[in-house]
Length: 128
Ligand code: HEM
Image (cartoon, rainbow, N blue to C red):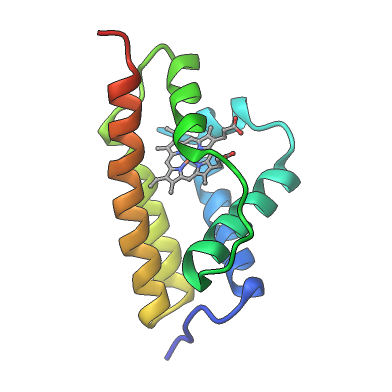
């Protein structure tokens, strides 16, 4: 049986493994590869984000709503629900490979909700 996500080290493994898949993905990899320059910084930030999310600590400092609106602007408003679907599938796949338990489930549910939330923010920020 797999273990559940228990600490920052586990979150870091999750985030690193996930982004390897994202960067190699033909449908969404380029958004990340073309936008993120400092990968060490990005992976540390996303580890903070998920640590804050799963363990209710205050580590993450960022504006993810705004960040995604900017990415959508950069790509001329071509981000679609499909891209979020690919992102979520890779997130679920990584979680299922590595972990099992209530926190792994929470990471799935939160990502699903965040995906809706970010996409709605992107959508409502587009020129009418
Ligand atoms: C449920 C889905 C997603 C979650 C939970 C998520 C989460 C995040 C978070 C927390 C950040 C850091 C934001 C900050 O700096 O304040 C980020 C950045 C980013 N996200 Fe997402 N994301 C999701 C989906 C996507 C999708 C579908 C795309 C592309 C199509 C995307 C592209 C990016 C890019 C390129 C950045 C870097 C922005 C920058 O540093 O300028 N994300 N994401």
